[in-house]
Figure 1 (tube, rainbow, N blue to C red):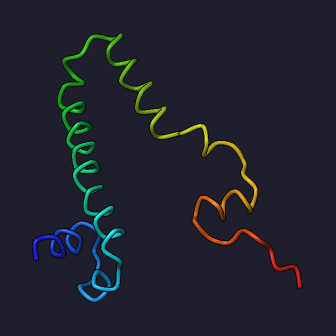
Figure 2 (figure 1 turned 120 degrees about the vertical axis):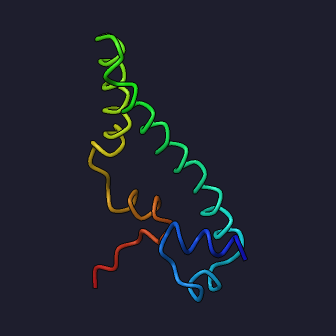
Length: 96
């Protein structure tokens, strides 16, 4: 029960939607919650620490967040086929 409740709370999914997911997919999303929440808490901690950091530490923190916010793979253009592959769908175009 807690498993479904946590998925519903975190992702905003309905009970019916969660029941329709296969267990492996639901578990993958469930396990991601801890990672996402931990990253959020680390950001919160960095914000609290920011006023007390020296300039070099501030610059390093800013650089790290900038790298995380702008991954190189998102900065380059990708083909439709590559996009489809990443999304896990058939990338063949129907040109009819």
